[in-house]
Image (cartoon, rainbow, N blue to C red; front, side, top):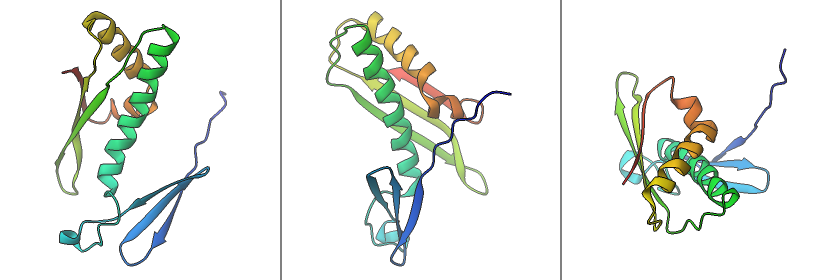
Length: 135
């Protein structure tokens, strides 16, 4: 039997519609927009979910570049989730990578490494249509 690694976070109510996610010494406020009955004190949970995917992918991408001594800069990830079904859920997520790196072959290799190392991407792949492309 293999060892199981655990990751824990806490989410605490903040007022009538908001919450605060807590892990280690970090905090993120989440809420619904006013149009959906919230106070717009932070991103919605689904938006935070997409940002978590982007943050995981970005950290793996930058680590891959640093370990290979590639000068990677100006990286932007544009992430779009498609929502369908009842109950509603993400059925597809597309992540577009752009950067200042002129060597597209090297960028493609780094993107592949980041995708393979990203815990969130690895979790999503069996459940939804996950598309990672270079812009």
